Length: 507
Image 1 (cartoon, rainbow, N blue to C red):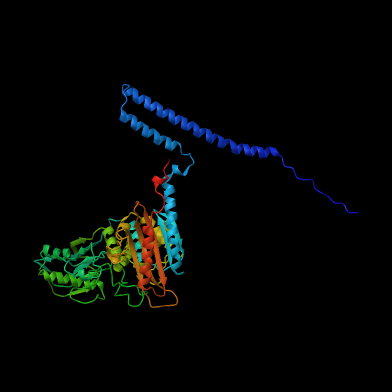
Image 2 (spheres, one colour):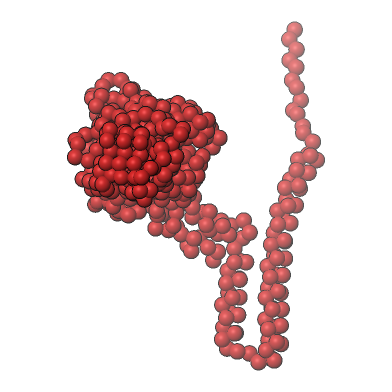
């Protein structure tokens, strides 16, 4: 015998459901009546204002006043005729979002032309728009100078200056019986006035005159030095170059440098850089002294200043903001490495690359920059094992937007490392960016060659676009990066492509 048990259908109580429906309807009805009440109150307020104005005018109406009131009333009705919850009550943020979305739509198809070892990121006014492999560690090349500049301005301040001094024993009857000392204070752009820097590919500017110190000897009545001119760069350690740089970089693209550096370690009428920047600087000062009729009996050398010698002359650099400008426009490798060591001096009294790198790591962490994939090993970006991410670099750009770092960048088609770039682009004069180039022989594994660009675009509507594009590959041909830069520039120039605030305003 089989017994089938059939459960009776479940029946739910209707009261809770009706209660929920009621709770949902009540606020909606309240908002509707509230909006109508606000409209009525606004009309009553306008009518009362018009009545008061007519009474104050002695009951005489002015046709112009009447016309103005009619226009104002029409505008008021347009605003009040727009729902409180309508997007037209917030035209600015809606336009921003629409423009950002359109920019992303224009750029993202280009990602198909960027390989899997490269990255890209863009934002507008600090708000992220789109990214391609933004968290991928890539070789940043000289765009790393942006980071050094940002941290240096943060830690040292834009008004920070460097002092170079000359110290001597007492001057007796125009004679110094002993050695004189040229003491470096970390100034990276100390230059003799007659050194032909105009022959350089990127001539230094905002420089500090070494001649001021030669003139100090004359002003103190010195006619003869019975000793040696000694260059003292002991503020920093004696690491004049970074050994891990690629082949042919040291003593060519950068270095030697120390806390005393004149003419980038070059001497007038001698070819190439000198091995010891301190001795080279002393030699240049001795030359300038001889030109002024001050005889130096025992030549020049490097060493450390005597504590018994007194300061007879000082020359002060331009403010750090100006020096950072020179570094970014010319991609000045020596300046970047010296600023790194100066950060170490300011933080711990240690003028070393390692001390400076510690300041950079700590500062980036304090700023909330994502450090996964970030590895900074020098200041110039010449180290082939430096890594950064496009997203981290973008956040640095967002932080320094509008600062002396941003305003100190090369300008497309006009200055520095960008003077020959974007010449046929609509962004000439509107794109400000740091370039980066690191060429290595073709390899199958990192370190890879790098071509990078990071900076800003001034949009026609006043917005600022921040962007980072880092190409890494075994080889990067000039036509490869140039064509890609050009296409990205055209897409940047399309911004803003969405509706403007006037189109979105209440109707």
